[in-house]
Image (cartoon, rainbow, N blue to C red):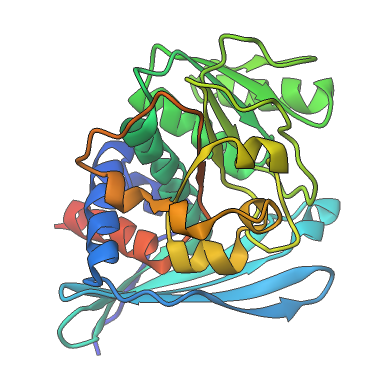
Length: 302
C-alpha cells in the first residue's frame, strides 16, 4: 500500500475553511436525514479520571471515515489538551485508506461550523451580538468561525472569572479576532448564545426569548446540561442528530422534552423556518459531520 499522508493540527485546519465547511454540513445534514449517510450513535468506553474514548464511523457512497478520539476533562490540570485523536479517511467504494486528519481539529472546526449552520438556518436575521459561554479550545474555534462568517458581529465571552475571559480575549487578539469580556450579566442586545463548556450544571439560565437563538454545544452526556430546563421547555427545539441527542443530550433529557416536537437541523435546511418563538439548537456531534469535513478536506487536496 502506498504511504498514507498524515496531517497535523495546523495542516488539517488549513484544509477546513469554514465557508465550504458550513455548505458541506448543510448538504450532509439533509443526506443524513434521508439515510444516505450511515452514522451510528458513537460508542464510548471509560478512560481513567473521568475520561472517555469515542469511536465514530460514518459512510456514504463517496467516502467512509472513522474518528477515534479520547476526551479527558482532567487533562487541563496537567496543562494537556482535553482531546486527542485521528480521523481516517477512506475511499467510499473500496474502503482503501486515503489520508489521516487530526481528530481534535476536525471535531473543533466541524462543530463550530455546525453552530454557524444553525445560525444560518434558524436565526431570524443577521446576527449582531454573539455571546460565547466557555473559554476552552472549542470556544476559541467558535470565535474564529464567527469572525470568518460574520466579521462585523460583536463577540462577547463569559468564563469562570475575569482572568479566564481576559486570557481568552488576548489569545484571539493574537489571531486577529476581537472578542470582549462579558463581565457580570448578559446584555439585552445579545441575539446569539453559544454554550461550549464541560459543565455538568446549567451555565445559561436566562428566560427563553425571541429573537435570541441559543445553541448548546458542550454537554454530550445524559448527566450534563448547560442550558436550564426552564429555558429548554419554553423554546422550540432543533437538534443535529435525533437518535444521538435522544441518547446523549442531557440538556433535553433532563428537561423531559416532547421528542415528537423536536426537529432536526437537516429538516430545516432550505425551509423558511418560523422564527417568532425562542429557539434552542442542541448539538452532540455525529460521524456524519466528520464525514462532511473530510469531503471538504478531500476537495481542498484535489
